Length: 424
Image 1: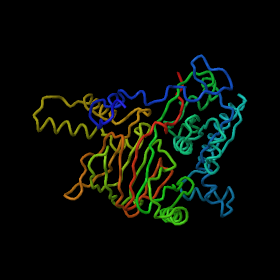
Image 2: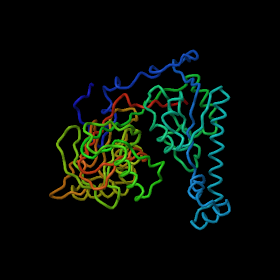
Image 3: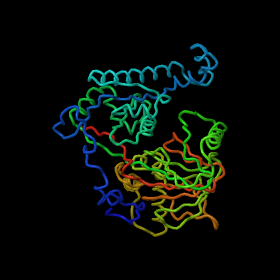
Image 4: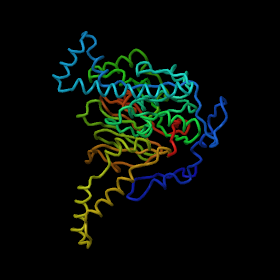
């Protein structure tokens, strides 16, 4: 690659352009990887003509509460009273559930009117066989549902995109613009006529090696685990499904579209591990955990870990003015400009083959160091010295990661997720 060997780091300047210079060959030519022969190409040379589509629907809070107490055989009246005791509104949850349901029906009806076979599934029914059956996957929910939809898709010929079915309560950064929630038929017409471009969102792959490792993830969405049950699930997976002495390097069977978080399961306990960035020297670190994200995830948790507030920038400028006796006015316009430019430098394009690492609340003393709190990287290695830690992929899949385990995180172009970006 043109930028092989270059290590990129955060700066106050626009590092995004530099990071991507000379890397266009990494991305697949738009629309060139998979072209259906079912119908002729559009005038744009792109095509979206699936015959079978899976619609993955989220579990609404109303459904979750129903399922949560189903063992007790509660009536709707009982559920309403129980929610009132918890300070939740039964009518509010039911109304939001109905909004979601209507929007899902709109998506499904629009697809079927185009002669497309549709299979509607929930998270419990969403598995590898379902993915193999489909030509495309549509998530109907919010960003969490989109992450779940992407987690089981390793075939780059299958487009995955989301529809935000509750725009009033969900931001839906990974979904189509809100306009298409209420007019999905319009989005479908644009897709079928080629008025879009493929957007290849890069993802992180994880290699795991060392003593006592188990590369089979626990599904947190499925478990809805308490800490006790979470630890039990990991223990069962370790003792029943994977020999502890299995040698070699294992590729974890999920890819991170947003981020990988590594840290102790008990958040009040400091995480202890060793870190090497881009094959650099190893550092001993103790902190509140490590976040490694993609360009897609750079707008989410990573951004909120690293962003500066208006107040912090204003205070820093005033101190600089005081100690250097600088003659400038730290007015509102200057503070906003510096704040926005710094925070913008924390974001990268989702199609860039690069990661951002963020060390949360590092402890620095004569034993532990932290030469950088965040930065750009192409490869990052972590050796666990933790007692009860895990790697959590996109908030949905958890892998035990305790003392002796070694993880290597990289971006591979073959893992890029095929999504769509509609033309205006």
